Length: 122
Image (tube, rainbow, N blue to C red; front, side, top):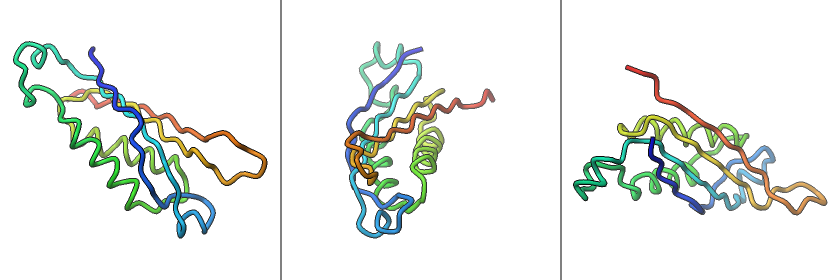
């Protein structure tokens, strides 16, 4: 199976456990991997035979900007489920949602959540 990688989708959002995270907001970074058959698109050179990356990026940015969840796990799940519903051609999706500046004392790293979803066989 072929895979499209969309990495470094950076957007500002209001998801977080602490009340100030939901009021002040913070930056998030999202990476998306989409598994699908790209053999037709590789032959035809037609965007109709693949996934339009712009729509996926727009969906991710909109969800991050407008969602107010307590947990980043919930936001990552909403992103994965929404993309899988929107992208008919994708059979599997992986979302990595990172919080580069987690408000944890004496912690300079980032928090990342990685989720995978597979479309059920119909």
